[in-house]
Figure 1 (spheres, rainbow, N blue to C red):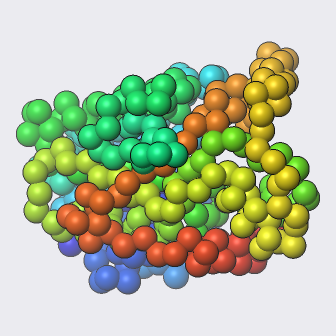
Figure 2 (figure 1 turned 90 degrees about the horizontal axis):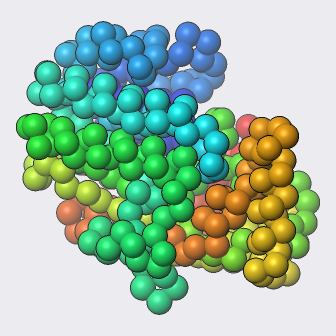
Figure 3 (figure 1 turned 180 degrees about the horizontal axis):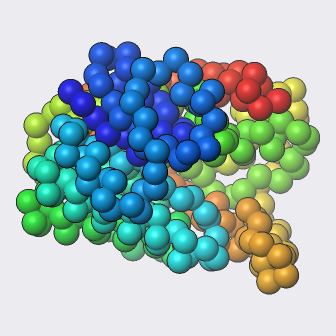
Length: 326
């Protein structure tokens, strides 16, 4: 099997390339011309240098592949950069969809749980939970652009596209070169964070998500099928305590209350007006106050998805970050 992978420098895309190589499949990775070669060390793959928005290039690459795993994306949890986010997460996806339709290639589209319903502490969300549940997702640039990308895939399915949509939770693990989700763990390694966000997330291992993604390529199923690939549902206070412990730091004393959330959100938005939008803007604060807790039963039953214990994931992620980024 020959698979075209976008986003190969990202956490999931890099893990997917390594899983494909280990399984003996041929892969083609889309890279920028200035990509650091160390990111792909140990991977036997063919490289294509270019941009996701280069329609002719993408169409030519897809023509020679059996399937596409579209893992490229722009993650910005804020109100700004919407146009840039739409260009990458929506327009880029549309180009992939059109190429797959033209050449009858199967598409595995990497979405996110942030395009689905929000869960609660009492009941994690699944693929059938109404999108307005628990107040719905925060309509920031990331959420809106990723939703638009998923809609492009679904419209492609109506036109005959063979596609599967996967929605990972909060992924951690090795190969986080940029880093992406590992930034949270790195921040906690640098000193005591007294107050944690008030919500929670579903922590999963990127290696488990990558393995399930590749199984979705091989498995025969109805086009447009969606799968949540999540894991351990944790409050941020508990997650931050586990992360801090691995770097010899103290656990947070408390979760942020309403006044603290308002203050942090307002401070972030003031900075946004005079400089670039920081990570602690009001959109990110609202998102981190929700319980993004999910149920992966469908993926476990139909894709053989098997999330490993979260403590192993945290151990391995911390060890990798310590070696590569500290």
